[in-house]
Image (tube, rainbow, N blue to C red):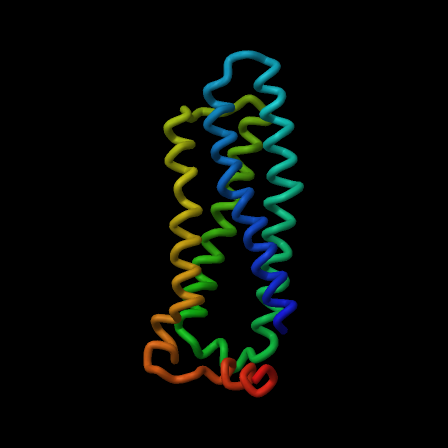
Length: 160
């Protein structure tokens, strides 16, 4: 399971790299006036969205579900995991919204200025911060009571 967890983290980092950089490209794209720059941004945005961010999202979700499948009964009783999964659902919606914005740029239908995209660019840090705190600190789980969770006990038996 440690390999699965490692790949879950690797693909999460990949996904977030796309979520951090794509809105930044939108900022520069919205500020561009010349056709050469506009066409270059369209190519960069497409490759980032479909070549990095979307595969990162898909594999993050696959490996995350694989981790949950190791002990679904115990894990699904943990409040922190429910909150994390809710944030991941919102993150997926954010990802899809970026896809909609990309499509608007692709078809030259952008209706927002660079300031809007600067604000949109801040959303991933909120998701990342909250998700990492939930996973590491587990504020609504066994950890804040000084107890090991059933999953942590099972892992300790396998990896003493």
